Length: 223
Ligand SMILES: O=C(O)COP(=O)(O)O
Ligand SMILES: [Mg+2]
Image (cartoon, rainbow, N blue to C red; front, top):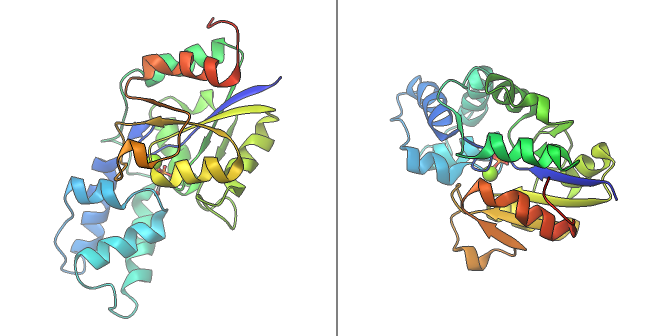
């Protein structure tokens, strides 16, 4: 067996909402629009950059203003790669990644964040070396909850047994459609109750993840 753990990024490995909120706020301010709250930002992340911008503009009542979405999206994507300074890994993430690698598992990322800012934030936090594969929201024609990006990550790692770790409705649906075990991190940007999301395991502390992965993959011991 070749085991792998594939992670969602925003709301799972990292709390990136403060950077996304600041970046979006600075772009919409150019159009005379008020910034978003952190809470709004968290609830709009998860479906990719275009949907995020769409939701921001809808929240400001200007979703139908001609040409605005394309302009704001371009401005947002321009600065998204440099929006890393306020982003932090969730507690215990770094130790858990080391422990999972020590168990002989390969690690990957499957996010709806575009690939360039996804790589940038992982690099900024010194986490990029952990991941042999990073699939972003613009890496394929499809994005989560389509199973194709997760399947591409699995193929890229050559994995025969996989656990997908994510924080949202989108991730739960992706795992289900791909037929992959799903571990739900409950401290991210999820909107629905935990019980509404199909999952094999749920956790609120990354210290618990190696044991969960061990159980999902049927491994014998945590190194
Ligand atoms: O919606 C995004 O841009 C990213 O969200 P994800 O990392 O949770 O997939
Ligand atoms: Mg997420």
